Every structure is written in structure tokens, then in C-alpha cells.
Image 1 (spheres, rainbow, N blue to C red):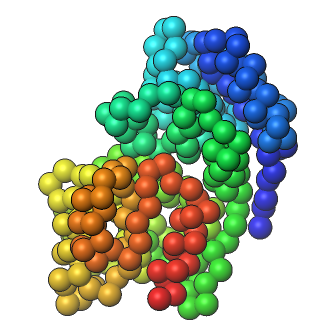
Image 2: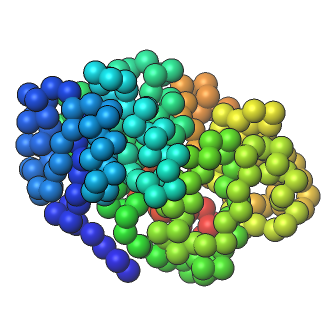
Image 3: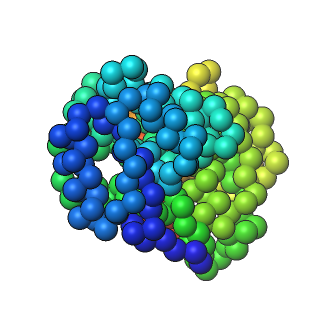
Length: 264
């Protein structure tokens, strides 16, 4: 098991306001994070990442020459930085503005202003993503588990896969939507992790297909969703999923959910 602490983290903070940078830096320092580089724009952030790649990018949403999504799109398109953890800090509350970041696999979205609990959880999620913590199961060997990951976002799939790999799971098959997943089910899996919002056949319909099948109706399903309405959650519960987590998800919670549903 390889474990990191917050003191091991090297962070790039991207924020146009010098006052806000100072405030955010102080909050990170309270969490024992001292190695903090700074940038105030998209271009300066990309230059810093190219010069010295950090362990985590923490960015405001709106920047003078673009937005945090411009940074995220660039690092996700480069193989060398595609898995770089990214944290958004924003006062934005509109779903359509934040959902693009959730779908891109950010490690956390913190409100502005955020409190120490928000930050502590986000830092722990980053450490979990960067560390190796094998999943301890009574009836399964994590190294032998066969997992099907279903999400129409390649970036979101990559984050899910990275979390699974930190738990010692390596036999992972990908599907871009529910339709492709259905075609792959006969390969035999121990677990399905699926997004909810997907074209053609969504996660709800995929779960219902699994539950109505005589061959793999027993297959555990973990659903990942960026939606949070009660009606939405109720529909998911009725579909027969074994567990539900939201985007962005906490690796520690995913580990707990996997341990529970695989041992049921």
C-alpha cells in the first residue's frame, strides 16, 4: 500500500484575483499543503503545467483569457497530463455550467467561499486518487475482478478506471454507452459501473436490462450520476441498482460501496 499525505502534494492554484489567491493559499496551508504554485490566467496556468507538472490543479471557473474548462480540455487532450487531478472552485450554481466539469471527471467542485470540511474532503479525494489502497474483500480477489465501466465521456471513464486501479482492480472493460454495454455483457463480469446520462440506452435502461436477464440478473451495478433531484434518485432506486454515487465522487466512498455490494 502506497500512501501520501497532504504535505506531499504539489498544487497549482489558478485564480485571477491576488486577494483570492492569498485566501485560498492560507486555507490549503491550514491543511498542511505548502507546495503551492500560482497562475492568474489560462495561458500562465498551461505554461506552469508544462514547466513543472503539479499533483493537482485548483482553478477558479472564470479567468481573464478563458475559463477553467479551457485548462481542463488542454490537459485532458495531452497524454502526459490526461490523468492530472483537477479541482474547481466557483460560486457558480447553475447545473448546466457545472455539469460539464462533472462529466470531465474533476476530483471536486468547491463552493466559493468554501469551508475547511469541503477542502479536507477534496484533498482526501486527491490523495486517494494518487495513492494505492487495495480493496479488501472476503469473497473476491480484487486483482481477479472483471469490471465493465460504462460512460459516454472518455474523461469520466478514465477517472473511474484510475480509482479502480488504485484499489488493485486491473481487469477493466470500457463501453461508451448502454447499447455497447449490452453487447459486451456476455463476456462475463463481476461488476458494472455505469453513468446515468448516456445517449441511446442510458444507465437506468441498462440496469433494467440486466435485472430482466436470466443470464446476469445477479450482476451488481454501481451507478454514477451528476443529477440530484428526488424524482431522479427515486427512478434509479427502482431500477435495481445496488448503489449510487454522484459526480464528482469520492474514491473513499466508491471503495466502501464496492466492498458492500460485492460482499452482499
